[in-house]
Length: 289
Length: 97
Image (cartoon, rainbow over all chains, first blue to last red; front, side, top):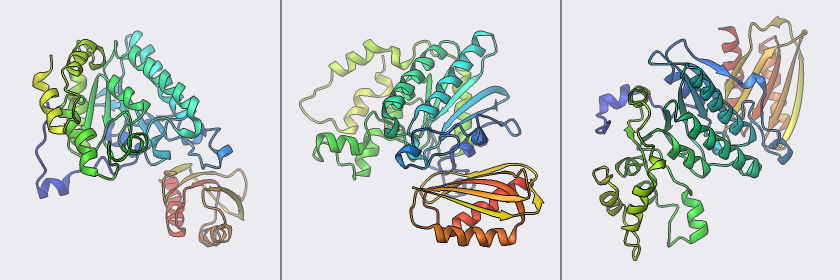
């Protein structure tokens, strides 16, 4: 398991940042050299039919890159969400691209040609301009993911800076393995949403230290919601992906450990607001049943 | 949101299509494809209204330097004129490689 130490100045200079890459560049960087092939790329012009009607500029690939190729010499497909386009929001088209790719991977696996599936998650969840269709798309993604992960492991990567929120945080949690960086965040509701719904006393969405201490990659890793904490480096993230796939399908997926999680929730003293350090103590890996 | 169209006479054929950029804040996406005739046609969809004149100046300058016959589609999310010119340049460069 990777528990990286902080990079020294030399290592910091030679690393290749993954966070700074856009979705297409991320997929290209992770696939073995020369193996990258894009499906339903921008020239297919499979863009959202709903955004223009609402005066929003669409993107030709609807912000979702489907890339085939190899990772560590094994056939793989990467589904990369472009976080810079509409905050990585999932619309009808981008959601359908993910769900369809997962279904194709399931077909391949059933035929005896398993393909490694990697989700690069950078999303605020449903794209609000396509609310109901986005919700339905995420439901389809999640049911496809659950069907697929019984045949091949599905690896999710949350690199940052958007993070992974809303319905897609459920998809992240359904992955067989989840890789996060320190810069990344994972949560059902984003900080602004919590503040708006419950007040600034409950959660101050400007308090970066608070936000990362609750939903940041380090906290999510220590408390067992993410399997790997990777440095923001293309090579480091690719190594984590290869290591995760080498572990095969988990005996029980995190989302199947319902009784364990219910027991832990029941043991929490809800009379006061938990500090992140307390959560670490209660939910640390060693405590896992 | 605004849609703009530009057309220029062109002589040099484009080798292959090219795609650059992202529809993200201050950036734009360029889809460049070979044109079926001796013309360059540009369609711009921009999130910022009222800058038609500036777009025309940027396009006029770019296509006074390059004579490529191309169909170009631009999805803009508030890129500056400099960023637009650089993305166009990058798309042309990529279509050559």
